[in-house]
Length: 180
Image (cartoon, rainbow, N blue to C red; front, side, top):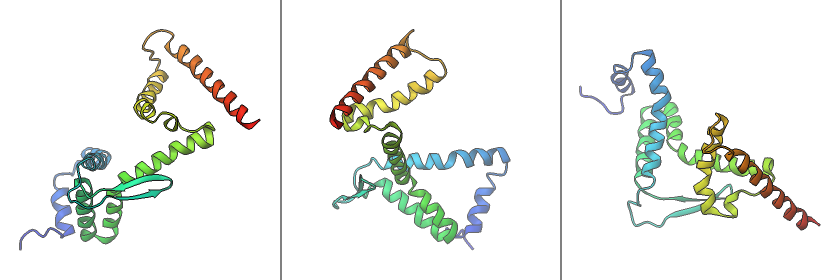
């Protein structure tokens, strides 16, 4: 009897034979899903496979587009395969296959909550989309590096902090004028 692609035990026995060391198992537990997610994310930037109209909809106030590209196709194949292997665990795996979208929604929602609830100010992207999208990752990196004492030159942090305070004060003054 040949290898059956949907035989859960045979699939696990085969894969398990290559993963019996506890440290290797831990490494795989930590890194396999992120590798898969980033691969799907990269494939999501491929062009549409068919000349079908793009499906656009709003979700939690964000614009979302569903494109039938390699990212969608690979995610669909994995999701269906996992559900066929085992309905319960497969359904969970299928949900994890779609996690890139969920992560995007959660992360963007968190950004807006952070600004609306804690900052009390609209995100920078509403004033300058390009500048905000380009600078946000670099800003976060600099904040992390600054925590460890990094400055590109002496006085950088103090200079930037004073400019930040000036910008905040200017914004508060404009906001106060709108209220009165």
